[in-house]
Image (cartoon, rainbow, N blue to C red):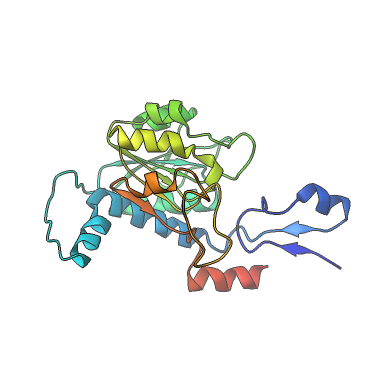
Length: 240
């Protein structure tokens, strides 16, 4: 029997309609890398708050730039989670352990963990959150779900984190929000178009806005490494 096993949470990289017509089952591994992604998000929250990835890069260039302006503790800040599934719910618990207030928005009513609170409307979550992190699948209704209107609804000085799917965020609109200083920073792990192999260029030929995004301060760009841990890869292999 022929089957297709996806070594990740989603199945959007497979033509499900064609597979269904051919009678080929398609399945994913929805639990295996959720902890790894949640930990990456929390590390990005802290890194954006403290800007220490920029300070570390400056140190490698021989520049000593000790400063506290625009650097914050995450204790007492509000984390808004869009999508309260396997990753979002684990992240919720980790964030509360750091003293954060957690809000979440989901298309279905979900029992919250800890003291997290569900928010009915995305606009309300955006307006209240110091950090907004996305954990939704790639669907027609989630494509560009965070674009210029939603970014404008976010708090002045807030941060956006996307470790979900590349097409969920309208990147040119995000660039505008960062350049105008409406947002204080962002962390992006997934992109609309991604290189097919390690060592391939990530440039304007792949995504027309790449060099512009790369030049903006306090933006963390990572090569789709949310589930790239030894533990996650081992569990994915076993699950699939």
